[in-house]
Amino acid sequence: MKGLRGKTALVTGATSGIGQAIALRLAEEGCNVAINYRSQPDAAEATRQEMMERACGDIERCQVKALLVKGDVSQEEDVVAMVNQVIETFGHLDILINNAGIQTESPAHDIDLDSFDQVIAVNLRGAFLCARETIKHLLAQNRPGSIVNILACTKLFHDPSTSATRSAKVAWAT
Image (tube, rainbow, N blue to C red; front, side, top):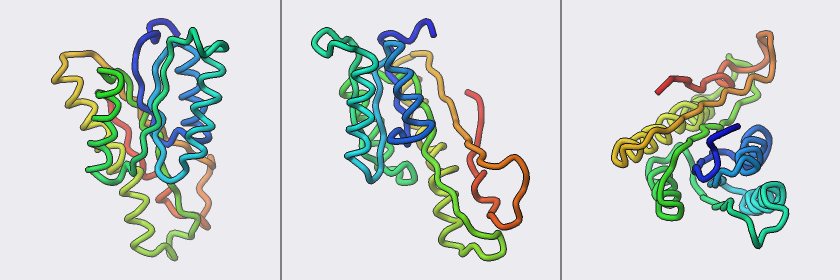
């Protein structure tokens, strides 16, 4: 991927799975990466260490930087603080990977409203909040940028034993 060297990316939900793989690949391409986590600082640190080893080999001469940023994407104050921390550390933010997401393993007719609201808060509201704060920064700095919204589907066919809330993530273009 050309053009990523020296860019800065924020990857939400970057402690495992798709988010971790994206963070690792961005670093391999020369991108500084902010690794968002909500409740697993050890997993975030493990991602950072693997990312630096892959991207650098020799850490002493490495030009890629990594930052661990704690924050719950469903909470506005956490998102504002997270984006501000990335900008304070790296000076700019070029790429947002909206990857954080949760799902509920429950038949649609059994899901309680609190569980549904939590899925919507993380998967939909969280993506919006992160995009909004990133866009504010990009406009203020008059910089181009990219926002990627990830939706992971675990099944190709509808299963009536699971709730539709698993695919409640929004996608839009900027």
